[in-house]
Image (cartoon, rainbow, N blue to C red; front, side, top):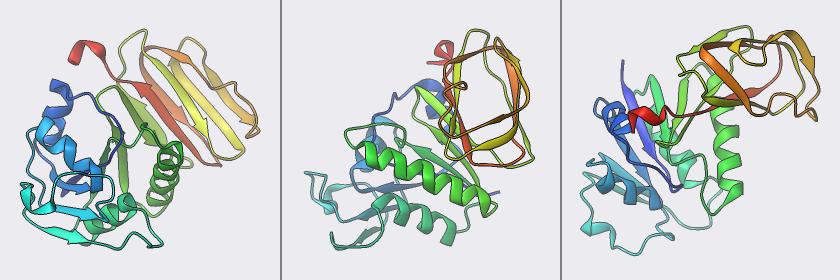
Length: 213
């Protein structure tokens, strides 16, 4: 298995848990995501983008390879970095710094990209040291080992059918929900949880275990 981490520009918490996860990953940085490389003790094998969000010259980084793109392109730097990881044989992709930041549209685009990748059969996960997230495959049960009291939400990008949540303070059993419902916000884990949807598009978003920071 070839595990890749893609460093994006959103904020992260360089926790011990996140560092341990990244230790076994090949790393690609997208534009300002290069800032996280030093904080996490990483040397990316590739740094790419239009470099409009960084102050340091590309030649001063520790990246093994640098690839520059024009600012007026039809793909985001994050999308280009994900595509580069797939080209290099990624079987799983960890998106770091994708969940927040000054640009809400960037965070939204990362969710959409992750859903598209999951539907194509790629294993995708988000982790910024503070929160983690996973696309929910249709008809597949996602099991996540959460500590009791951990808050989580199901972010829906369409109507969903057959939503089941087990191991939570507010469980659900095969519920159909319209896109406009906010019923799945701010649930709480009793321990490990199991989530399943039959149809639709959704992402499971959970707090990281604070004891592992």
